Length: 57
Image (tube, rainbow, N blue to C red):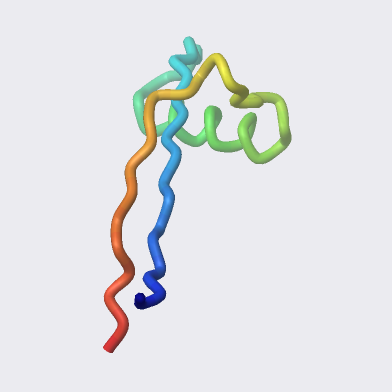
């Protein structure tokens, strides 16, 4: 038997409505809200999971 390192990747997402003068500003506002903990993703925002082997050289 061999040991393998497997990366588990969970994806979550949420759609927000942001009022801004343009798309770039809307993204900046969304990022600020996220990093200020005003946007919290939880189990209901779960989109899926993926598994990939880690390649060790």
